[in-house]
Structure formats: C-alpha cells, structure tokens
Image 1 (cartoon, helix red, strand yellow):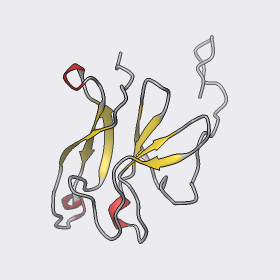
Image 2 (cartoon, helix red, strand yellow):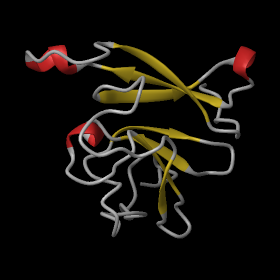
Image 3 (cartoon, helix red, strand yellow):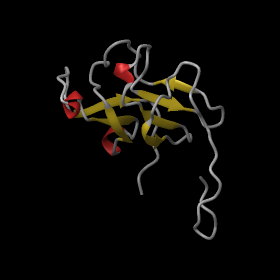
Image 4 (cartoon, one colour):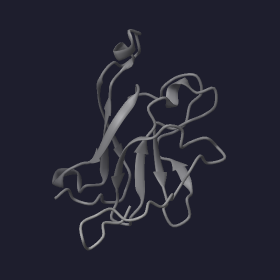
Length: 131
C-alpha cells in the first residue's frame, strides 16, 4: 500500500497469494531485505499435511514464494514451534539473520519439543535497518 503525498494510504496491490505449493498459508509477520524481498513467518507450518517452511521469502516482482527453512511434514523443523513474528538482526550479524519469535505449543495447552523462544536463521542478504 503506497503512502500518498497527503499522508493517506493509496490503493492496495496484491504481490503474492496462495502459491501452488501452499507455502504462503496464513503468513504472520513480515520483514524486508535490502533487495526489496519480503520474509514471512508461517505459524502453522508444522501442522500441515504437506511440506511447509516456517519462514518463506516472497519476491514482489514475480509473486514467487520459496522456503527459507527446510520443509517438513507432520512436525516442526528443529528450532521452530509456531513462529509468530520475525525481524532482521542488528549490526553484530551484519543484518543478514532473521530472528523468529516462537509462541510454542504451550500457548495452546499442548506439549511440544521446544516451547516458546527465539530462533535465528541466516538468509545471506541484509535486511532494511529499522528507523
């Protein structure tokens, strides 16, 4: 959604939607890299009956979606349990890592392998610095 000169919101534009692989199911939280690509966390990636990644990269120019973290079926990848938010790291990581907040299955009264916590994922490209 562009911000117009008068400060109002412009017209919304869809840059990606449900992809054929189902990787973009219920995104929650976004970050942007220096190339203008988006990263989204997929909270329910570990509960899908098909391979999903808890973090995906979205290319706005093409609408393509690709997994950042290896996909698994019937469980969460190591270090991930219901991711809810993500942000690029600070100067000490060169802003080339995403930090992903995980609520853990305990938030739903279930026992999981990890529980609530924060996971770090190297992505190899710098994120836009927060202002």
